[in-house]
Amino acid sequence: MAVKKLPNGRWEASYRDPQRRERVKVFRTRAESDRWLATVKTDVARGEYIDPRLARSRFGEWADEWTATTAHLRPKTRAGYESDLRVHVLPVFGERAIGSIQQVDVRRFVADMLSAGSAPGTVRNARKVLRLVLATAEGSGAVRGNACNGVRVPASPKADMVFLGPEEIEALARAIGPRYDTLVRFAAYTGLRAGEIGALRVGRLDLLRGRVLVAESVTEVDRLGLVFGEPKTYQRRSVTLPGFLREELGAHLVGREVGPDDFVFPSPDGGVMHHKAFYRSKFKPAVVAAGLRPHMRFHDLRHTCASLCIALGAHPKAIQERLGHSSITVTLDRYGHLFPKLNEALTAQLDELHQEALLTIGSTPHSETSSVRPIRV
Image (cartoon, rainbow, N blue to C red; front, side, top):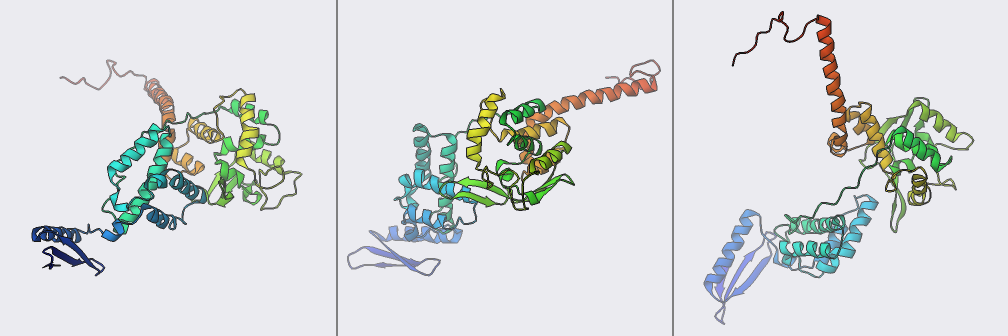
């Protein structure tokens, strides 16, 4: 680091950055140049040095850099991020210098979206993309901190889960008709996701042992169409089938010339089923015809499976493995409110055990023959 006086009376301060490139700045007085160099020296020592050239670069350039590094994401996730970036983030921050974006700018961005009527989930997704781009810039030394830190978005209202009983499942299956009734029962009693059901192939059914291997999922992505990939948690799992479902699946496949790569629940032309079209034209009309709650979604059949397992006293770990949750914490967070009912039944059973014990020994807790003496206080 060096300071020298220029012929015009001003003072030039210079230093070499961590990449050994010379940086120069001119000040009116020697004191100003000394203070600036001292600040730079402290930032370098703390690992907080910011490259001025990078700080002046456009946010849009960093967005391009970040987008180029998202190849590891699922196609649907990546398409969603790119849409949020294009529609919400770039129009506001695209031409801004990356180093000029402060927390107050992010707060204003969030407030403006909410005021314009955007749903909290939409705002949260836009803020997430903004944070990811800023994190890329931060990791490269263009900004000192992430301006999104500390900026909160109101929680989204949670959609009500619908839990069907066995009779309601059967009513829905009959209302949807013979082509898809097995699909409805399969979804309700296995807990598979819609994409996992759509991608299920005949070769992954083991009706003799009553198991289905969940190894693939399909999803519809805007501008990409149908995309196949691994299940949501990237883990294969084996799900057991109730006896009635084994028989029904066998009957479902009888009469079809199917190979191991054919779909168990295909579209009318034999290819992969388009879930959005099925949901709109078949599932929702069947919900109404069965007299169920109109807001019920196909995903509620997965919730139904969880509630049936809980009612039967299944351990949360078994439910986690059946549904393919990433951890047992996810299972408890999502369905924990159903377990208190099970605890009430358990408490009643514990009381019964106690009463049976009293009958067995022919005594009551406070009988005169009891050897337990009262505690004096």
